[in-house]
Length: 252
Image (cartoon, rainbow, N blue to C red; front, side, top):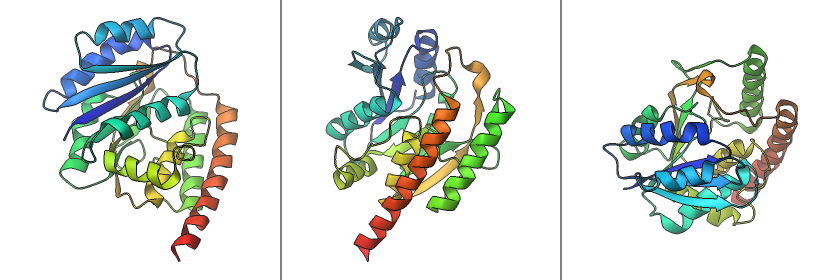
């Protein structure tokens, strides 16, 4: 059972050397490979990854132009669809040092030893927290989390966390159900919710582990546009709610 660390990278040259090293330390007892996609970076991200691949187990993918997080995740997940076995595990995480690689073994254990299909590194379960985040963004995040749970009935407290371990089988099953064109349809940071919800509707067993998300470690500039993200997020919730009723009508 191999573990694949999926890294969407856009202008992350200041972070990647440390991140790849910390991943290697966290995964010392795992059969792991990093799959990194350079999403049209304008800095030295691609060349740095190319150099790091001589020392670490890295498969390097590339977008010639910046396409956004949703397309980076599409590229990464479809690579795993074609190149991994059903029992392999996929770790999705950010490349900006806010996701501590030290949690990887715990996430892996939830799927490998406890039989979960998805394990989420969560800010909002008991023991989890976030540091270095403006207060207004904390309030907005919690409000969107509550709205999502109430509307979509998904038993997850941190639906927008992109730090997850996913069984490859669950991704393959969802892609085959929704099709290559429709598995990912959103075009922003709400892609994390879309992926999780489609896995949930497809029967994935989901759990959460507590983490501390420390934004003070972030060296690169945030790509999040708050107002645009909120509007897209609400639109995505409505779209996914319709998908829920469509799924129920087809199963009844």
